[in-house]
Image (cartoon, rainbow, N blue to C red; front, side):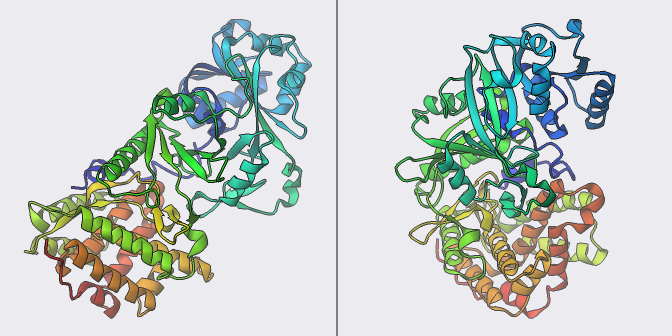
Length: 572
């Protein structure tokens, strides 16, 4: 029971926004691990972090003493391993022919190189199968014209990509000239000239104002004998993984997107069917090895779903291939046709798509329910363990702590049977698609629990519906949204009670278990959220304060209706 949850480490502040979520362009390269990377000029900090994750050695070539001091200060501040700064003229510090990746830090740096003797020196660092990465703005030129370097690149392959946004970290890329895929990514909220990352990692366009100079085209260029000469071809490591599974990716349009601001956010590749224009495959890649288990868990969960006949082409992706090129997990799944739930049903907690989602989660629970040998007491023991970990991270008042403990103790005293269910683990609205037939597909099974707790998916999903509805009405306070919709006398609360009643009847959950499962759900969500909160701000956590709000409202009619269901479980 709850194997993934119980084995997870909840370290406050271990998955904060943005500090290392850079270098997404690395996933455009033929491979994901490098013996030696040479940067000509200092690259941005998040990119440097990413280079250190994929390279065994990183060398930054600096022009002048001031640049050397600045680079070394950045290394110390970011506590980067396996990276050193050397002077451009120090030939003894630059091993010849050992670099399999050379990064030109800017187009300005490239132009400077073409006017000095430094570029021939850098060129000699590259292995014969190595790759040069460079970004340009404005009119796309061949690398030879941008950086000079004589004839060493004459026979090199080259790939060119349009990239977005117009400044900062690369968030999306398509082969140059592929305006159709650019439009596809834009429709999915994954492309913008200048943007910030919004709800669910979606890219939102913002007015440029003084940044208008960034509205022009921005390009990434890969060149070298290690680059395929065929424009538009997907990275070799992806093609290798797919070929091993009997899949040829060469016939698809494709684009890359990296919209998230957390190190746990994946880099995505969408491969579009040329006939239908819908994604035939979606590939996810981790940015850091510490996140690999999320994708391996998703692979195992999807395999089990499909092997047991629990999924269809319109309800969940089909697993296609998986691997760890360069030590980073990569998962390919089939695409699912549909429109994002957040774009279709944002204003009504009990909309038709919301009801379809509730029905599917309910039937998944009913189809996979397995009685727990130790009954509710066994589940209460696991909740007690989570509560102990919760108490080491968060501080509740004595009254709240006592009330939470009373819920867990009450669960252990329930005499009725209790099942485990196949749990999605993160069925928020942002992970749902509304299919053309009006059904709902569930994406992103990274947090799945084959032996999870009943009702947790339902409660988490309902909270996301309430948040979405409130935002549509202009309410930005997510805690107020939860309170107004689910903890008050409202149509949304009625829908919650009705849905919970039906779930309990179909899955076989005793009414006495609803209350402890409800509080256990928010305690668990608070534990997961702690990794995204700096230690000094833990008391402001959304789920911690949601749990407090629920404990305060425990005796009020909306929750009493939920905890006093008239349930007649289906005989099993």
